[in-house]
Length: 122
Image 1 (spheres, rainbow, N blue to C red):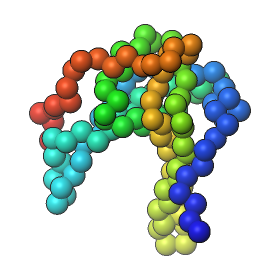
Image 2 (image 1 turned 45 degrees about the vertical axis):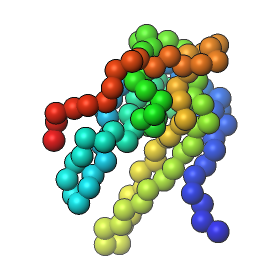
Image 3 (image 1 turned 120 degrees about the vertical axis):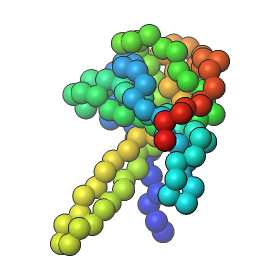
């Protein structure tokens, strides 16, 4: 049995979360070339338990978030995943946080903006 991800107790792991904005967009790569197909967006959130900023990846179909800076937010179905990369006798582990959505605390539905994901950066 393989461990694919960890489902954290969000309150104990992250504490209070505040929105800090969009970090970057991730695009699909085909044959080593970046395509124009958006895969996900990475947002910065401030975590009271982690003592700083964390990055949270949200799928592209959720839409671009229009949330005020420092607004209290919650993660919908967060997962923590690990990715290891070995180099000789050493290995580095990179932890990532993925969620279905970021919602403003107290609201039941997030409000994505009506923009589409296109970029000329290659």
